Image 1 (tube, rainbow, N blue to C red):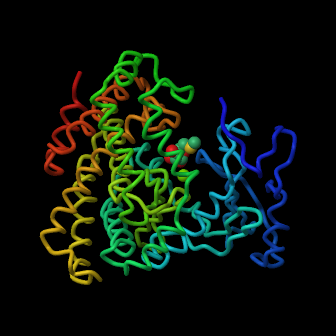
Image 2 (image 1 turned 120 degrees about the vertical axis):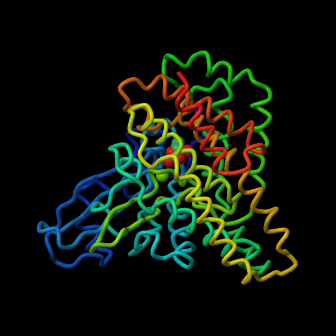
Image 3 (image 1 turned 90 degrees about the horizontal axis):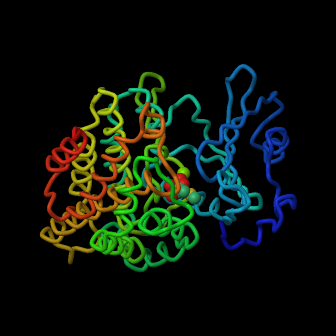
Length: 407
Ligand code: SR1
Ligand code: MG
């Protein structure tokens, strides 16, 4: 696999990077050196889980105090040095947390500090919470999560769009949030590679026919190209940029539900439908898993709940817009555009998770991943091709049910 190197990436796997790559045994001294930890004893363990970075949890032996340290490696963690990746993605993540904190501080983890020299964030330990994907895979229900996500996307979108921010300030936001390398990953692994012959792609044996058909389908290719171009050019609002169910933690603290959106390293100013679409794509795959297991739960309600919360929050904020040249009729048109693009991006997210680089445990851990993966591909294609003909969440629900119950 050939990828261009980054300056902080050693040319040989045995050559250390030009910054301090932390190991568990380094964490106590590291945290003390930064003043994040007093004299208390520390136990450290690694909980790295995502594709990109390493995460360590440091806690006192009695568990009364804890912190997380997240560090970007100079490569994609799951690929190793053969896929160099600038660790400056941690700068993007730290910046995004600062930006989101101004809008929705309770929806993200507390950030205690960012060490730009070593591309490491020290942050709230969320190991008492659960990754939403894991929770759902084990049969958990959503509770209020989708409403939270819809309202969160609306709040962030409004505040960082031309509706919530003065034009000149927003131009600065766009400039400071430019993130070419991370955007390129999405342009590649989500929005083109699955439709090409590419060495990143892989799929379940039973899907050879559909994977080939998707690569040979000019109509599908053109629609994905249109979505890719939207992703590359539509600077509507600051995005999380990778809002799948593995980027959300859920749980209860002191009797209250807690939702934390984390890992915004792919953040940039882009099309709002990309955040909603990623969430929907993952919700729909979770639904296909549940249907395959005969445990439908509350999956089918989630797209409607998140969209309704998104729309309600955007309409609530609309009267406070800074530029009233955008009239009420334009809001309706804007929402229709976001709706359609969200469906399209949901389709691309589903497809790349089945035949692209990064797959989902929702499907891979099924006793037989083949049938549900096939349904996922068909649903993804329908969402992309039919996104302008699906008027509302009920239509998507009916489509997911039709595809999800097909033999
Ligand atoms: C090489 S990275 C592949 C995926 O992992 C991240 O979590 C993003 O979803 C990215 O697309
Ligand atoms: Mg991530």
